[in-house]
Structure formats: C-alpha cells, structure tokens
Image (cartoon, rainbow, N blue to C red; front, side, top):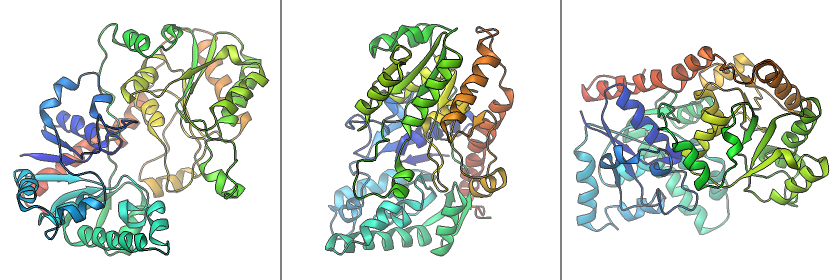
Length: 431
C-alpha cells in the first residue's frame, strides 16, 4: 500500500510520516512550493524538524504549486497547462491512499481526483470558516468575491470529493455538519518525540546558535518560553477585550518569575524568545524588576533545536498564557508533554468541557496558570519538589508519557493506519 501525505503545515504531516513508520505504514511527503527552505520562518520545513533528514530525503518531494487558493485557478481545467495538469494528476494516481489538509481537497478536485482523508489544521476549517478567511469574505470588494468562490469550492470539495474528513475539536465538527459534510473526531500526531540525539549533537547545536552553555548544567532550574514578545496594547483599533484574545501576556510570565526569584534565588534561569514587537518593552520590564542576571534571550530557532532544548534542558516549559475555546496550544506545550515535562498553559475549560471540546482529557503535569501568582506558585512548587532537595534526580513521568502516546502519539498513528487499511480494502470509514 502506497500512502501520500500532501502539505506540511507546522510539520504535522512530517510528524505523521514518522509515526506511520512505527505502525508499518510507509508514506511519502509532498511539500507545496512555498513550504520548506525558502521560508523566512521555516515552520513547514522537514529539514528544521529533524537532525536526521538524510534518512527521509528519498521520501520527501516538492510540488510545483503553492499552498494558496490561487493554485485552484492555476490547476483548473480552464487555466492550467494540460501537460502540467497531467503531471500533477499522475503523481497521486500512483498512491492507494492520499491524506492532506489546507487547500488540498480543492486542488484534487480541480484536477479530477478524489482525496481520501482530509484533516484540518485551523480552527473553523481552512478556507471554510477560519476567522481570518471569514473577515476577507465580508469585505466589500472584488477580492471578497474571490474568497467567497474559494469557500464554495472548498465546501463542495470536502462534501463531494473527499472520502473522509477528520476534525480535532467539536467546534470544527459542528462546522462540517453545518455545511452537510460528513466528518468524525480524530486527533492527529503533531510532534514526533522519538528521535534520540547522538552524543555531543546538542552541545554542537548550542554553539552553532550561540546559546548559553549553562543549558548543559543539569542542576540549573530552567524556565523556557518560545512565545514571541507581544503584550503591549498599542494598537488603537483594538478594544481591551479584543486585545486580551491576542496578547501573549509575556509581562505576566516575567512578573511571575520575578516573584519566584525572591523565593528561590539560587541557580535559576528564564529563557525568552527574542522575537515579536515588544522585545524592548520586555527588556525594560526585566531591567526594572532587577532580574536581568537570570534572563537569557533565544533567537528564532529551527524546531529541532527548540525541541532539543525542551528535551535536554527544560525544567518547566511555558506554552500560551491566553487560551480561548477553538484555539488549543502551540508547539512548546506538545513538546513538553511528549518529553514528560511540566508545562504552564492557560486552559479556559473545566475537565468535562475540555474533553467534550477536544476529545481528550486535560493532561497531567499541565499547570493552568492565568495570573502572576499562579506562575509564581507553579515555579516554586516545581523547584522545591524536585530541585531544592536533589537537583540531579531524574523524576518519573510515566503517567504523562502514556497520556501523550494515547492521545497525540502512537495510538493515534495506529488509528490512521486502520483508516488507511480500510480505504485500501474499500471498507466503510465514516462512523
């Protein structure tokens, strides 16, 4: 059985490819032309998601179309050069199962192919009811007419041209049902934690990116946040309520760490991302609080380096301090959970609401922090429990390891393997 994974938003399909290897499903990955090494922030580039890209290069290919709605027009029967259209179609006709997200359903329809499995990566479903896309559709311009056409084309592609649609949260399932599109809830592996770095590889990476060698000190209590600095409301068009939904609240983390440093002042460090519009504001706040000696700045890093920092050096990770239903969390939280580490992450739902919305329980070792005092309490608890008494102690996290593999890892890959085998065997797949 041959399986094709089309598109690689946030390296989701590259993670899925490696997990499918673990359940004996061999897949190839196809990147859109705007994914990969040409990106200024290469979040869709497999090369930046693994130290061992040479092991996968023979299974990664590039398409000659970008991940854009304009590609639908380019690939349409009216506007696409016949030879190129045949080439695109012949590539995927050679596979038994094709899995894609984003604009893939519409692209397949435009060349006369059916997509086997679609899973969304955006709240509201890509090009259907994504908030940003809906805003474009509501403008009074000819551009809005184009986006409305894309919405209709994507809806019909999902409804009539895709065998199985998967959603990762109840809101998106309701969007699908609203548009009479059959779908089911299934979680998708979004991060692959099973690579083991060779000896000295992490040390070399720290040197290459000029990161502090103190990250190698196993007795140091490291708090790591990759959130961009975005917390000063200087956007006049936004109300405070609107701003509260997009602010990263970095000031809450910095103040929480400051209070923590007054309680536990020894051998601690805070690592912050040196990206975002409010880097200088964060520097000023850190200086005013007198904690400059504790703070280290992290440049924009390939995911493999950031994930290695989490795996090798992190004591407590920091995900997002703003959370609204429909938006879960980013890479840092998944990486902490995958590597069995505690993580600070704001959660706006209780356990029952969370399970209903996302189809999995709130993970253990997740600190639901919303205030400065919450963060201080979390850090002090972790420091006193594990570092003050025995800094070199390796703490067991078997419960968290089982949680991740059940809800975002190997078990979910097994479900994808079952779906692929069912499609290959022409069995029903929609429950």
